Length: 145
Image 1 (cartoon, rainbow, N blue to C red):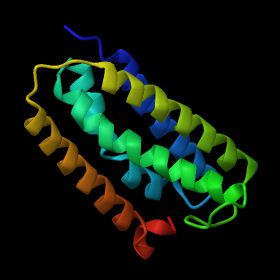
Image 2 (cartoon, one colour; image 1 turned 135 degrees about the vertical axis):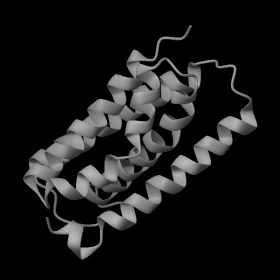
Image 3 (cartoon, rainbow, N blue to C red; image 1 turned 60 degrees about the vertical axis):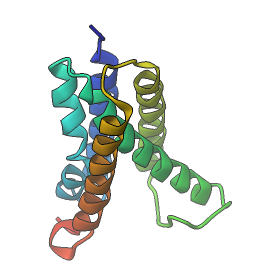
Image 4 (cartoon, rainbow, N blue to C red; image 1 turned 45 degrees about the vertical axis):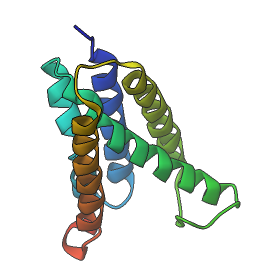
């Protein structure tokens, strides 16, 4: 049986770091909404389910890409994501990025008995959910709380 503890810890670190960002910036509610899909992987991982890998992959990939876009902006190389980032927010981008890389490495190295097409279906569903919750978190009723 595969050990999913590292994957669970990586997802929890991403959530914690993004909640810190919420605490020092726009509000925690927005970041609670944005990180909700990570809980699927956490719950599945705690149950030692092979599906945890497939639920974690799209979320960790999504957050890694967002962190890369932020760093491209901070370095003045691209303006895909823009804004003003405090020192704490900048530090949390590093934490989220490293946790995402570690979680992706663990997930990609984990062999499961899940058929690839079923895994990709879960991957796609969670990926869509992650994009939807990001959009919801930007609604004025949530974004400014």
